Amino acid sequence: MLQKYADVGFLLNEQHEDLVDKGIAMLDYLIDCVRDGNPDNVQYGFLDPDIRRLQEEFIGDDYDLAEQIFSFTAPQILRSALTGGFPYIPASNLYFQYANEVDVQKTADDVWAIFYLMVVDFADQVRRTKEDRNYSPLVRRCRAYVRDHLYKPLTVKSIAERFHVSASYLSSVFKEETHQTVREFIRQEKMEEAKRLLQDSSIPIAEVGQRLGYCSQSHFTDVFRRFVRMTPREFRENGSKIIVENLTGRKE
Picture 1 (tube, helix red, strand yellow):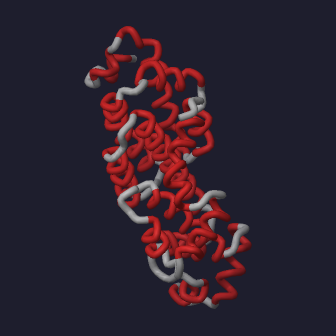
Picture 2 (cartoon, helix red, strand yellow; picture 1 turned 30 degrees about the vertical axis):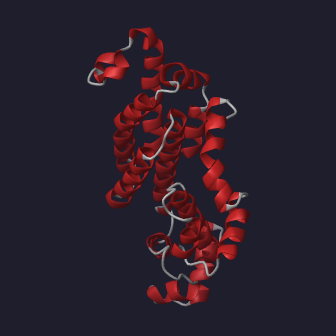
Picture 3 (cartoon, one colour; picture 1 turned 60 degrees about the vertical axis):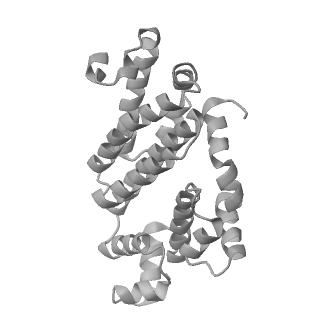
């Protein structure tokens, strides 16, 4: 099994061969989760005791090693997402977003947390892509339009006009098929985008709300707190710390 990955020097450490085998099995598992659109299974996988041991004993505090592992595995996660049906352009944009975020991290634990977020995100995007196939053409186009225009003003009326139907008809069909309102879907997608933007520390928090069309920082903060159960600042400052603690069992 090791020969399959012989071009990656860090996998040839005989002292950790058992961990490497488990790591390779884990990568194959994550690839399947992303391709099949199963973000929940990704979370379970990262909590496996053997994977925690791999992260603690094999990677430890070695930032360069963590970054090398990310550089080796991330393209495979991207390919599995494309195989699962996630369109190439948004998939590529998401990949580079996480790759850029890794470049500004300072610890191995932070790289591990970004890798976890990336795999969950790709799996969820594939899940959404597959889910959309179950809806009528109108609802699929509506959902795609919202995701493509998160930085523009979005109302039920403007979306309905875009597809030449009445706002009441769109609202009724959307709610019947998805079990949520158009407004709820818009808010959900904006908050997911806000979480991605907040991972980029170079973007001021106030700008995140402005980009997503919120008229004031307080309004953005209120909506974000209701959706994520913490403020944007708390998410930025503590998000990866909480993830690291959950993944490693270590308190920082």
